[in-house]
Structure formats: structure tokens, C-alpha cells
Length: 178
Image 1 (tube, rainbow, N blue to C red):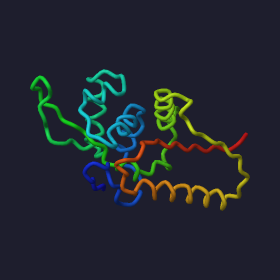
Image 2 (image 1 turned 45 degrees about the horizontal axis):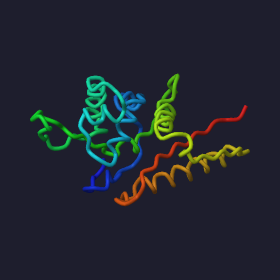
Image 3 (image 1 turned 90 degrees about the horizontal axis):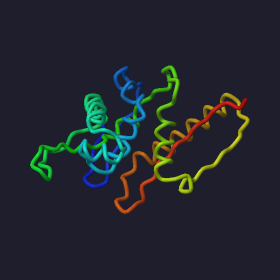
């Protein structure tokens, strides 16, 4: 579960747990991961989400409904748009951070990587800060490394957002060397 603080995004509360099949399917979409990212710090309507992602609002609505049904997005209070139409703003709950997907078969294309690459393409590679490191680790050291990285990410994910802070995205990928 998450608790939201007005103006500073979702506060992540709770322990990591295995994702249900429906939750895992919801997080297996690059579009849905990008929707969660754009709705992290502010509530957006379906039309606003579609505009930010450069997508068709009808297609985005399907993804929004999936995220609402699985608890990853929460609808806000209905409001009237500029032409009097009913609009519903949506906000990410932070629940996705608590999902453990490690025991699931890897999809043919990693949606986390695809979402990251789309986001980098949107801001430009010149704004990407990256590093690369080769390591030689025993199984115990590899487990320790993964646990420490996860603990660091959890610590920052659970901190209240700084309303004056700059928005950043972090992607970490690991693979065995050939």
C-alpha cells in the first residue's frame, strides 16, 4: 500500500512482494510503465497523458484502466474540462515499486529497458548520465551487491519527494559477461 502526501508524490509504504499474474501483466507494458512515470508527481487526465506520450487517447485509456484495475494508478476527483466535459485525473500510487517480478519468465523485450530508452530519446542522450562497471563476483558477493543496490533504491524510493527537487529517472541493468 502507499500513502500520498499532497504535492510531493506517493509515499511508498509496505514490503516487497511477488506480483500477482494481473499485476505482472500490467507492468509488462512499456506504455503502462511510461504512464506511471508521467503520473508520479502530478495527477493527469487521460488526454494529458496521451499528449505527453504522443499517443492516441483511446489507446491510452485502455492502459489507464488496466493500471487503475490493478491499483497502480488512482483516480482523483472528477473535474470539468475547458468545454465542460468530465475529466478524471490519475496519479501513480507507487505500488509498482513494491512488486517483485524476479521469479517470472523474462519477456522477449524488457519493458523496463524499452521505457527507459523511450524516455532517454525524449530528453536526449546528451542529458544521460551513465557509467559501466565490470566485476568478478562469487555467488555470495553477487547476492550482496544486488541486496545493497536494492536497499539503496528502496531508501530513496521511500523518502518524501522534495517539491523543489529536479525530476530524475534511474535505470540499472546487469548481465553476465560473455
